[in-house]
Amino acid sequence: MIVKRRDFVPLLGAAIASVPGSFVYAAADPWPADRLMEAATLVGMLRDGQRLAVIFVGFPVLYRQKHIPHAPMAGPASKSEGLELLKGAVEKLPKDTLIVLYCGCCPMAECPNIRPAYQVLTKRGYTNVSVLNLPKNFHSDWEGKGYPVKLGSGAA
Image 1: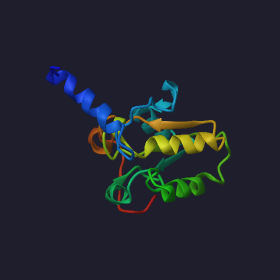
Image 2: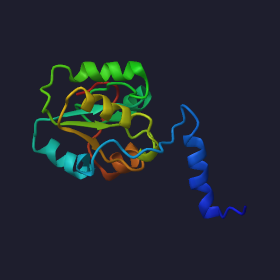
Image 3: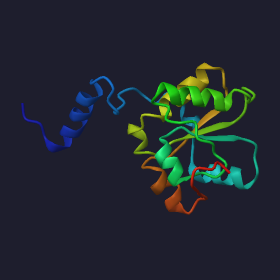
């Protein structure tokens, strides 16, 4: 069998996806298309003072470098401890609160955190959960566009 170069990457991805614990996702995204929020939309909502919760579900080292102002860190949702922190972060919110989840650790298609975070919240009955569309990463798709960032570990 001859494998052309353009066919190699999808084949490699499929092989890696079959390995337990891999970071490549073979399944479709768990959110419908209308739950994917563009960065410019979120910036406008934040600027207008809309009531919503923006929650970081990635790795603490990235949060400590730069994050969206006023977004608390729930921890990496790829780990059970991170999912428990996420549950705690939303437990007092009404179930219809607009919650925007983001990570931005890597290309979104490969992110180990965003899908488990979305799934746990929707399974717990939260009806207005969106995912911030950061196709490449936080640096390129948020900070690189001049959107507001906070340095350090404080959420405010």
